Length: 101
Image 1 (cartoon, helix red, strand yellow):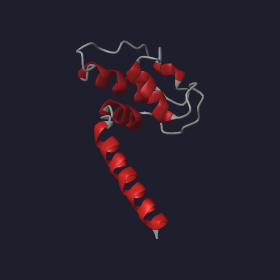
Image 2 (spheres, one colour; image 1 turned 180 degrees about the horizontal axis):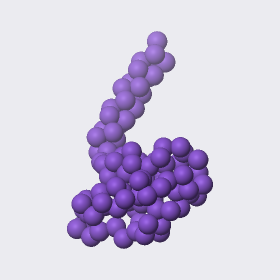
Image 3 (cartoon, helix red, strand yellow; image 1 turned 135 degrees about the vertical axis):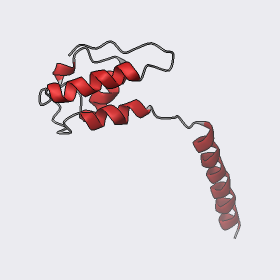
């Protein structure tokens, strides 16, 4: 019986710890990543050097991508809306992402 009580108490404490961690350690995602990912071809081929379109979009927002032409399946019809979107949505500090076509 003591084993059941011990496991119940431990489960409650760990559950409370996880609930606290979920609230305290929550990170708000950057909504620009999802918007840019939607403008990419969505093939997830990896020829850009990133493991998919979502990672490429994160690289664009983080400033790790130098040229949008790294996305080989992408064409000007994909690049132009991304460049326009980036000029309309600056970083949280007010700076703009500088990226070449």
